[in-house]
Length: 246
Length: 231
Ligand SMILES: Nc1ncnc2c1ncn2[C@@H]1O[C@H](COP(=O)(O)OP(=O)(O)O)[C@@H](O)[C@H]1O
Ligand SMILES: [Mg+2]
Image 1 (cartoon, rainbow over the protein chains, first blue to last red):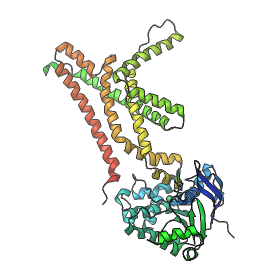
Image 2: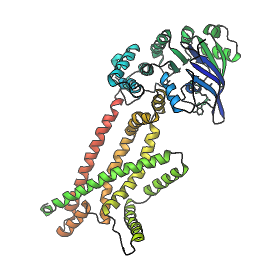
Image 3: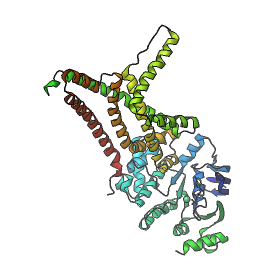
Image 4: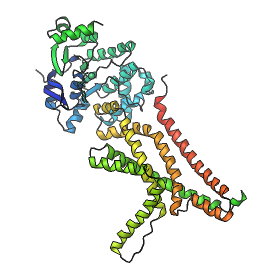
């Protein structure tokens, strides 16, 4: 049995006296595709943000590729190089063109030269089907295009793992599919990914496991089929009845 | 207007003095502003209190008074300092150029403190997070993301601070610096044509301000290029 790529062991996270994560245990193996869902405020973002140390857990252990996340800046940087993240609000750098957004980290972090970084950037822009937007600024693109740029930006670092935090929640309905298609392609190519999303169609078609969180806890963890057809927990059932009813 | 012939060279050299004060005080103003903003944003309560006192004092007192107090105050301070080494020294003269430059830089720096602080806080937290998530170091994030976003936010106010500096150079005539107002007063005394003499000063200041305004407008247009309307 190979070592899991992500291990979270008894992880707690507090904001002041408020406990946002309660005893989280999670293992993700290479190539697995995990969908995380749950009501707003249940700790989904906090959980995945602990994985690349945008939030610092208070107790328990998190290991990424066997490397434990501690205060060591060196370890944090090493983990961040291997873990890409896509945010709900895209978070592109507004003062840079699309191309520069994509080239920045390969140049600064991976120490590629300019022409190599550009080559990488164009490769992934083609992958998300918008090479023609390379020289525009983020504000000139639609939401769906911006999110595809953000995915391409993460891919330029060739990460081992991609984290998605509600990547389609800020999008107009007609733009959701273009982003989900890119994500499905990635899933089919074997990318290890954790997606916080309420796109249940996506969960059904690509997830290996669905995780349901509520009040800072992982309440249920099951295959998509099991999760949707036969949820065990009352809170899961309530949640599913609410989101599937509209 | 012929009253003015013979004074052109005085006006010219006085303009050079004004420009020199502007350049020196601009540099100092940025330094004071950055230190003030860093102190206000720091976790140190003492640093915050000092920075607050600084902005309250310098924004809350008449500028001309600050110029006078710094000029005479620094003379007293330097005199007592020098007397420690050589008791025979009666009085140390502080150059009006530097006392004045320092004073107006401190005044405008107190406004710049708020501008820089606001610009720091105005940077989208999402951009900073994205940079950190991509593995950029703190320093790289600061240089490549925070500064470029900050200067765009700060620029309009910063342009106003530059104009304040230019105008405040006129205050320094009160401590006897040979700048434009000083020349105009001398010329008035000789020719008895105050309006002519002072309108020339006005036009010179207006010329300098216009150049600065155009420069800032150019920078703003460049900085806004990423906000061009969608398609
Ligand atoms: N930086 C923060 N400071 C204080 N409380 C926070 C912070 N971030 C999140 N929280 C709280 O933690 C809880 C979980 O938040 P989050 O992980 O964003 O939930 P979700 O992504 O599931 O909607 C919420 O109650 C939220 O208010
Ligand atoms: Mg969230």
